[in-house]
Length: 573
Ligand code: ATP
Ligand code: MG
Image 1: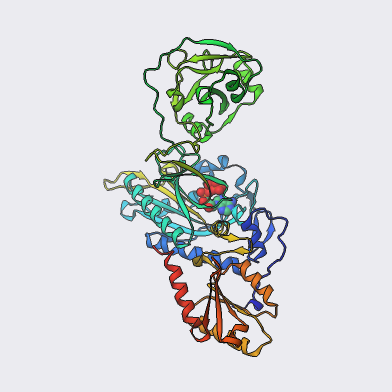
Image 2 (image 1 turned 45 degrees about the horizontal axis):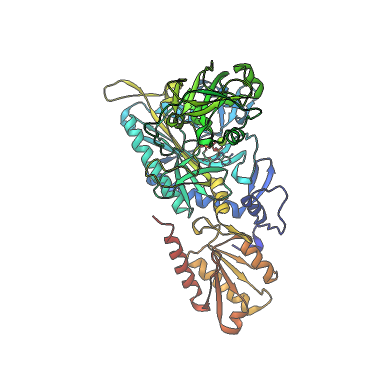
């Protein structure tokens, strides 16, 4: 491809609309242009990168036994009514009415459509398992579309759905997909971790998110420094502390704590550690109040709380609600004598002689003990893991780092097949609902995530497997006949070797070409300029690391071929 003929509008200045680096660089490098909020045009170079991700996804999905199909983007409302999601999905689902007053929506995901397709066409266990996927434009009317391709309203997703005859079969399919996803992201040249994710009411660890590790990621990922344990914040567990043995329970006492409402203030005033104080937070779970107990230095993980309570929505009560529910102002609440349902974080049960609010303004209770002074209705792991915590598997130090979710695999069970009455006849002729799984990859987001992970102040540093081109060939003097002829010869040679090459044949100063090459981030830059006319040498510069090698003109193409092959082996499995 020739730069001079390509729609590749690079920009010197960073457009004001862009907040994160991938968005800035994709605009500047001429990969994307915004059409409307969260809706982008993919320009030729951006699309090339996207297509490379798609190709890897297709190869690995096909290898794992999945079949590609393509489902409609417009979906009728009745299917969503059948699954119950027409009401539940909320405003991210873009709904509209056609000229015949039929209601439809733009697909944000395709569980309903695929389940409908399968229920109409698959009737026997003999046709199972079945694993179907598509790569398609999705629409989600995100409340805050932002960061360019990272969180668009219209974006490209690979979504796959599996149908098995049994739980055991579904688990095996899940494992296969897990394996395929590892291969996909490795082959894309990304540093990533598969993390345990919350699977809501389905339970177990049958949900994994694939996170590209990048400081700018929106998600916090908990990883063990010692073993392979990794989880997102919603799911992350820590090793339980052991309760001290044979501690004598001291007599309960009420103490004055005038104006001391915050954990830190109470602890300073009473000269105790937050580790010896239990805070009481009032939550509203589907409209009902519940008191949540936590150690003073811990924080609630609301998804864990929501799962424990089986609630659709939980939120912290505001000060007024708290007072209305308890008769006590925020800051002086405690579990002793509290007329509300009490749930306690597991770590609270390891504590003895701790301090709590006295349910009376300006007062706290000291030497409180579970069992003697109050009993929680339920105890569970309800808290957020922090960096002081130890790995639940090996006891190693946990680390909190940032990630970008590029994939999600999820065991759906029979939620959709039951709702849509999608059944098959099993070996004994009994009607049985399909056991399903779903597997998503944010294809367009993956390209943005690759840039978030791999860039410097000059521009993108593309991982070779998903770079729009492998080689950028710079003709550094289009007015010089010898240099131009050499560049053209090299261009043909590289193409003949099957190397993807972008020739910068523009009539521009070398400085501008260097800047654009750095910005676009193609892994190998080949410079045809004065060193050719003076010394017969061509310079090859690696975008990552900046290593420059001078080679003779005649061996340039072969040398590049070797360099590409050896760089690709790092991304092979
Ligand atoms: P998020 O928590 O980031 O909103 P999600 O849980 O809604 O993601 P899924 O429904 O699991 O996402 O979709 C599968 C994949 O699609 C995600 O892993 C992500 O990579 C991608 N994706 C989801 N929403 C968007 C979006 N608005 N823009 C770009 N990619 C997205
Ligand atoms: Mg989402």
